[in-house]
Image (cartoon, rainbow, N blue to C red; front, side):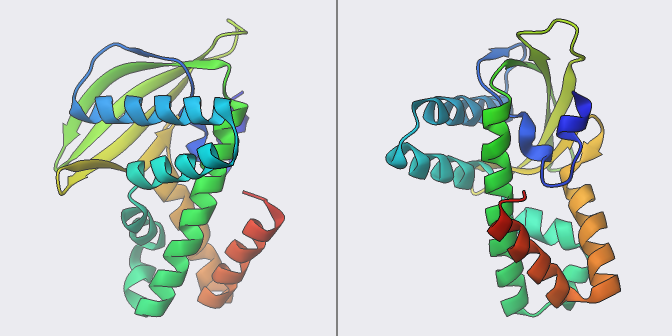
Length: 197
């Protein structure tokens, strides 16, 4: 099962349906509430609920932090227009990958294990467990959140020790160094056009 969650653009796979709360805190409550809302909306389906799914993603994910961290040192070299274009494409990719994988992982329960402060961030550790196959290895997922304006937002997701931001940064940096920033933008557009997220 682990390979399902390993691919870049698929690491947001692991926020799933029915959940159990072992140790709650402010950040944990936010993650749990958003996941539960997403699961309910996707289960209901329909155009209006689809719009609401996007709204929940927007409330939960810190796209600006994801974008800047995903480009790493390349961020400072980009113009404001390039930053805006990249951020918008990344937002679309993340949302599509997130939704696709939510639908794939409805047969898992999420256990909330702990909430740990790290500087100004909070890491919420969870474990995804298959409801249908007890032989499936549980998957550990950690959400890194920071508070901005009194709102907790997810800035990174670490799956089995693999950081979403770190994976993005490695891939994006490689493309930029080899083919340039315009090539990265084109590859992101191609992924969206093909639904290959």
